[in-house]
Amino acid sequence: MLTGVILFGFFLIEERGLLSLTLTSDRSYISAIILMLYAAFSIHWLYLIYGISSAQKSLDESQPLLDEVEPDGLSIKEGAVYVHKHRLEPGIFSDYLQDLLKKSRYPSREIDHGILLEALVERLMAKHSFGHFATDILLKFGLLGTVIGFIMMLSPVGSMTDFDPSVLQQLLGQMSGGMAIALYTTATGLVTSALLGLQYQLLDSATAHFVDRVAITVEVSVMPLLAQKSAGQNDAPRGAVA
Image (cartoon, rainbow, N blue to C red; front, side, top):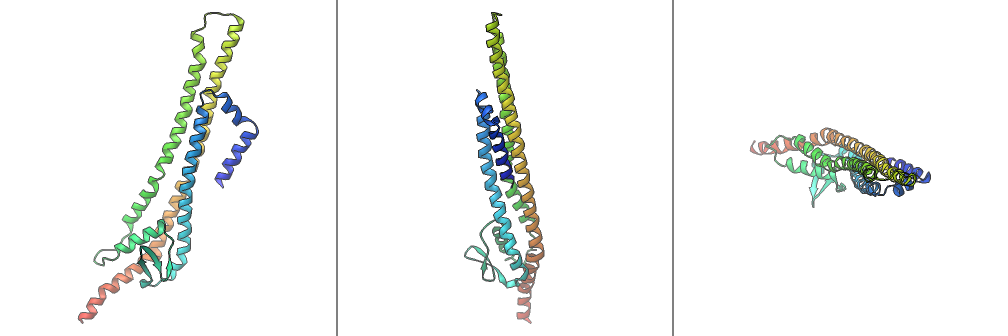
């Protein structure tokens, strides 16, 4: 939905001629560079959003199966997690369950998924760090355009030796061109930086929601099964000795 709103906003800007005016007025081409970087960073954001959405979908599909599974019904076969005969789709949640099942093979250890959950959070959030860096890069490019624009605006003043009206008119034209570069690049950097920051903020929120769902699902539906299975494994040797 956010992608559609952003695209519609850019369509309106182009429809009113503001986008074309920005690109043609910016002789430093920094505005064009900022827009291309924003497009590339947005593709990276879409890739991460797709990954979280797929993981959330896999979790939603697995939830009913995990609520009804027996202790022996959750297993690893051929590198995949099975709930009875149903194979979970490979992904973030499936990999997490696989690590948890491998850990539960050692009944002498207390089954706790806290460390695995922290590792999952760090692994997911590490992918977002580039986006926050990219947001800052767009803003820095906008400020760079501001500096370049002011330099281009003031440089003709130092070389002015004649106060002829035609020379002054040419000078004012050059100064206005430099001012246009400063303003357009600043506006482009601010807008794209704010949009990209919003996009990654929503991605962080979606990731936090997914991690919460994973923690609740595992704690409520999976951990009791593993504890029951571990208790059965510990009681089996005692029964054999008796």
